[in-house]
Image (cartoon, rainbow, N blue to C red; front, top):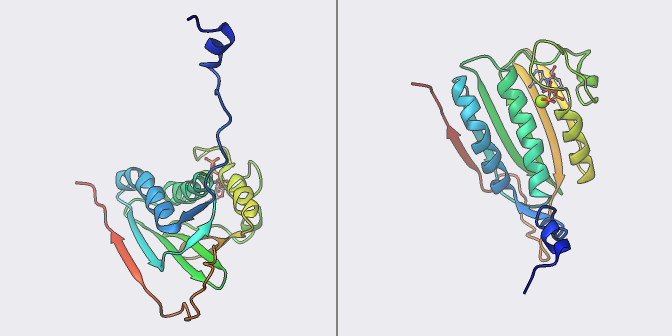
Length: 193
Ligand SMILES: Nc1ncnc2c1ncn2[C@@H]1O[C@H](COP(=O)(O)OP(=O)(O)OP(=O)(O)O)[C@@H](O)[C@H]1O
Ligand SMILES: [Mg+2]
């Protein structure tokens, strides 16, 4: 039996539309994957990656897109933090949302730059750093499409990029207060030989 030519040509193109990605994911899987991806770059700069996770709820999120957000934020932190610095990835749920924070010990973001960092193509130093100024613009689009918020803070100690995502509420919700709940702190130290 011969294969119809139109079927052969479809081998090169996607044969079927992929189903909509699973939109529920556990936050620890998302965080772990993003950390794993950022580890080699951090290691190359002898930057410590610390993880501070308080509870690990399920959330309504497209894992691939949230991975992209986390990769952007961790990538920026690695890019702008000098050798020997520390990046902390923090996740904690409060009320109906999960708050994820990427904290670095780099130079921070000047106060007059803070309102611009999510703009398309915006960079504090366009010529001196690799990149296109698109990461945070894309991250904002993804986070807002999920019904969350994203913003930047900065201090003398470094930059802090924060975003929220709505949580998936279980049908029979646990009425116990989340504050003081299960706390898991994992720390990964990486030093180049
Ligand atoms: N952690 C950070 N510390 C200091 N400055 C930052 C940090 N994150 C972002 N910025 C500033 O915001 C700008 C925009 O960031 P964004 O991620 O959108 O672009 P980029 O990293 O320069 O390029 P791309 O993400 O497209 O590779 C950066 O160029 C930098 O000036
Ligand atoms: Mg970037």
